[in-house]
Image (cartoon, rainbow, N blue to C red; front, side, top):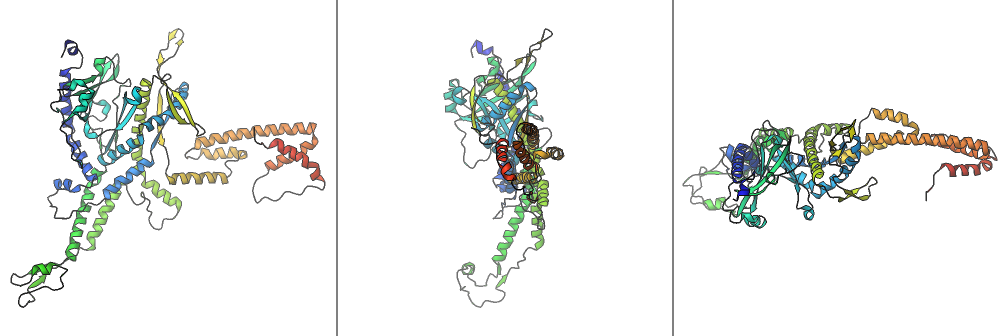
Length: 608
């Protein structure tokens, strides 16, 4: 180590200290790691290995591995993906409305380029199985040919380490993220590692993979994130190292890693617990009921096999050929001497009573009720319930658990979007092109940079400099696509509004009064549209009165046609209304030309 390296803040002694801290953090989450590995084994229907740890019962041959718990997790994952989120960026100041609208357009593109729907799906699987899904939001300088861009991925919980006892990951003194990499690839990227990779100083817990994954010839790359106070604010620094060899340290470079000063990890816990950012999942909640169901299944099948294959007591001197007796394909069985009644005696078989089967059904019902995966939530309605409103009410009530879980995922999603905005604010120094969908649904190409997101001068007030202000935004999250049932309900609501005359500008006042007492998706947009139509109708009526006044003064014949056209426009459009009275004889020829002229004036044609 040269003299200049020894003077840097991060050196060999600092790396050794960080490794000791990492080992302490790993020891602190040992119970969590065991629970996470066990939950993954359950998900793969490898229940026997876990049951042996808690039960003295032997396998005894066949062991049932039913999929009730598997079905619960699959159903919950489907609910979560059906409510896939979409960001809505709202400004906090009127001057930031334009930037908020631009971010609403480009954020979905940034997320799509990171295949965020796949990342979201992976994190939801982790959340449901182990209780916690974790996201990582960083800046990847190697993306786009060196231009760099935002990177979002799901994190393996076994490779993440934080201070034991903290509830919020942001309160941890340090956060470590480890990854196992091939030595030859590490030496190729960082030449200073050649000859230094002689042993792995740290090994993270791993899942029980189906494949045999060798670890020889690999080393653990450790990423350490930590916070410090500099110049009156908290900043985030980053150290990357292998063993005792430093690869990068932002503190040695003299600048923090990210300006937002937050750890780039977002936790999404299912059922939270105190003293940990992680929660527990459906495997922890339902494994006892699943174990009982599997044990009863095994017992039922063994009992069935005993009943299907009778067993006998055989006297030692019975003279029966056992091989022929047990071979069901041989119609004759050879015996020596006389076969007495007591030579063979069938062993009594007692089939299980229906109480046992009913008890198993109760345990299945318990598992479904505990997890919220009831028949109503999966689309099965009890007999006798036929009304659409009753079915909708039952499905609405049964889906409360899934909606609550989706809300927690939405909060995590809002944090992810907030971190993405901060990375855009810091690193989008050069304009970038984005393909978006415009207001009309057509493709548009826009150029965007962080020029308007950086701190802006506020000018002076009474000779006093007001300083700088960086635009701040609030992130709201909504479902990108509603379920088919929700869409059907929305369509039926629109048809009801049409039949009731809600879209008639002449009834705008009554319609607005009615809408004020209602709540549904898209209410604000519909209210604004009705107000605009009512305003346009008022303008049209004013122009019509002006046209009638001018026609009465300068062209009485045209005036009659305009009045008739106005009467037709104002007449109710009810199909059952009585027919209009016939015009007097000779009047049609008098009014036909004025009517045609009035129709040409009042009805719009094709604009060229």
